[in-house]
Image (cartoon, rainbow, N blue to C red; front, side):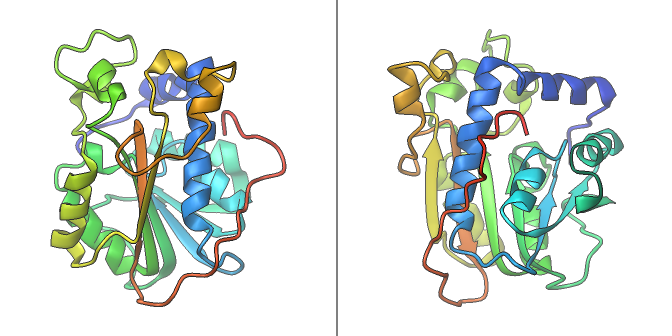
Length: 249
């Protein structure tokens, strides 16, 4: 991982998701993740969240029924994840491009906004495919989106920019090509959320109606794709939303 996260930067990261826009965005990102994992079995299935950060997606995945483990290179990020999820996960320090696990040690793995901060994202994909037996999900910031124009491009003046302007944003086409080069497979399913600019990420009408939908792969600020590694046919999707809305993890 090329980006280093200390306690102060972790606190700022978590504070963003406590804002109105951040809480709304995470709810939609979680909706997208749950849509993609709906084709996977969950009971007794081991899932590794690579670059788990403060554990927000890790917690969401545990709530959908997986046996979860989180890995991050930052002790401060892992500490935040442990505070959020406690004994319901296992926690590991390590590098995403050199995972400390055996081949097929997990049934599934996810990479949620991780490749943007890696020196060698294709090596990270190969490692994820090595340790996951059945499938991967990759979530990423969309370079074709209005969000990139606001916070990701060079010279962006939005207060949300900061580290995001230094990240390597990918287009959906970039991700498809990278998956093909790194692991020789194609994307099975992809979708996106949050098509509007940041100031529309809110629950009131009309913006809430637009931004609560899941859109085709190329349209939203945040995209995710599913890759099936084993060649088996996925289950008929059964949505696994939690009983209560999750705003801040």
